[in-house]
Image 1 (cartoon, rainbow, N blue to C red):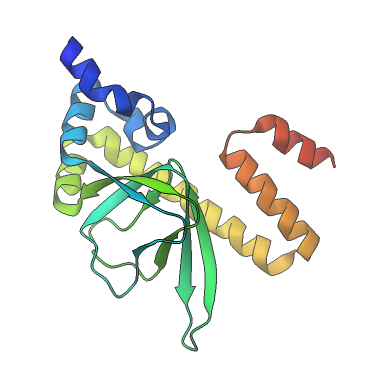
Image 2: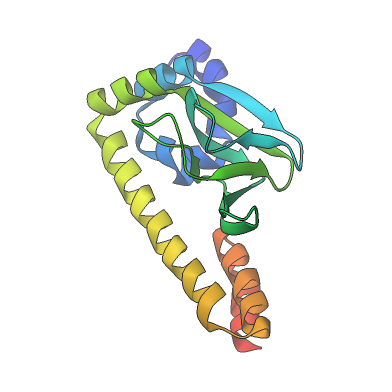
Length: 182
């Protein structure tokens, strides 16, 4: 890798997604192509990212912060259906609308990819397609855990499970082991 490429990719190398997310499977050359189509967006806590009524022009990887996904019920109430942390993905591939609202629960930084360019990368980099499938299945597992957390546990168990889930997702193994013992 030449010095220019190392300089251009410096921010990517320090990103969580490079270590454990979508970008983790990319070669330096593929990462350079990925970076050319990507752009960073920052959202302040409480800021709207997208809603089910809007068309989005991007698919994104969470670089930092927490994104809250909510579903608006027919009577106007909202239900939190997920929390996304780095290196989760936000948005839909092959679809420009999501049935959920996304809001920055904390200050958030996203690495955004235009739909068409991202889909071309998927076609050209089979490892990326495989990693996306794995990450999507992990998010499905998390959604199922979330349903159990909300539907079958006492209030105390829900709070403890939420803390454990967040600590585990943040790779704080010492903290999660302490919670399991208590």
